Image 1 (tube, rainbow, N blue to C red):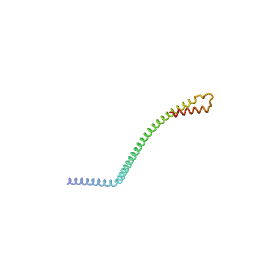
Image 2 (cartoon, helix red, strand yellow):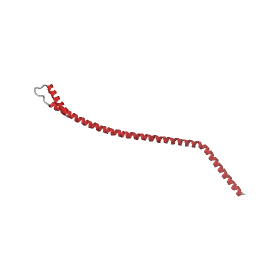
Image 3 (spheres, rainbow, N blue to C red):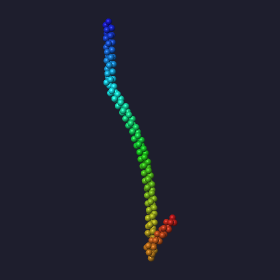
Image 4 (cartoon, one colour):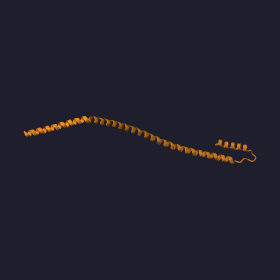
Length: 135
């Protein structure tokens, strides 16, 4: 009988331990469930926030890329405009030099002796105008 008593006692202790563990698990679940639910909700909210941030970052990156491409185009256009302006300036300087040389040639012409300055200027002007029209 002692063997049965020992086995019964051991079985009773094991049942009490199992019941205590089950009761402890049930109480712990009841205690921690609201905290776990709150933590899971925060994780879901932060995941949504991260997704929103990723979307915003991608949108901003696309905007920056578009602005960089526009900036490159503007820089290329500015370089072309500068080249055209420099070419136009060189051409204008060439025309101005030619006009200056023509003016110097006209001024270098001597007024015939005994001629009036106004009539000599008129003749020089007419002569220059005839040369211009001939071109």
